[in-house]
Image: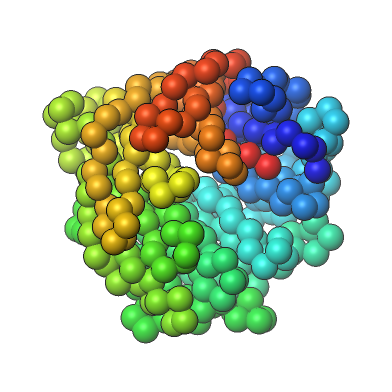
Length: 343
């Protein structure tokens, strides 16, 4: 792998993925890979220089998961294999067990999958779950448990992931989120003893304690992650949040004891601090960023944050100073940028 981290940005409006190299606090765009229709999520296997992208149906291929090989010199992505999904594409992808298992969640299809991966080839799903408007999925670091988030049903479904990649519901099978909160994306604490979920409709970070042996979650706390001074209304499912000035939470990432969260109506990034006792502390300041920031990412060392905006053609690079962001650069990427990952 390169000594300098790559940053990949999906430009759903252009059907492309931009590859940047981060060097001395600057983004250098190396390549733009076309033909990734409607890509709104991808996941990277850095050890094997592979990128798995969720794509929509196009003239070239059906909706499904496209495997691309990363050229670490040029930054170009070369398509290798494609898994078609008849019931609709994925809105979130995650890897576990050293890249040998791929998890997916489909918002439009209302289903989640578990697929084996061998030699960079994603196999047919061997396990499936169904909940309305699934928005994300992650596995625990040890690969023993998987958690699927349903935005419409206001829940997190929790499963044991078997050696045969079967999904066995835990007891209880689901944990409830606050009514009409619209849980969206999740992250684990570094110790894996907590799970944090950002909600789309109420703009909160939900804290769940997690038993690392049984995998079971227990709801503990909710704190706002949006700018209360903007008088945003509580979102209503299937209503336009921009038109009604509703809360529109999107993405969440953990770095150095801080949960960074994006809100799209006011285009802000905010830091929710995790206190020493595990409790969450609501943000005190907000950074206005790229318009409609659906996706962003924090560098592995926690020093930098890169944010994309669905209503912008640029990404913003920040350095992180405590709970504040200092803008270093804006770089051209493409239309409808909506997903960012280091890898």
